[in-house]
Image (cartoon, rainbow, N blue to C red; front, side):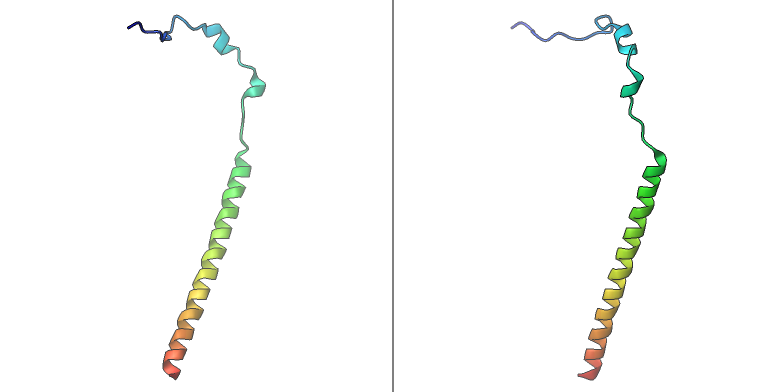
Length: 70
């Protein structure tokens, strides 16, 4: 059986073509935007934890009062 797949080697590719990439196509990311997003996510998580802890405290307090009264 004959192998129809051609293997790429270093000698097959033209290095000049690969080096002429336009600078406009390089994507950059603003680090300040990413840091602000992380800070906002941390604030949201903290608020969720506070709400969860307060609800659990109210439930435990309600169950405790109900058990003491009855």
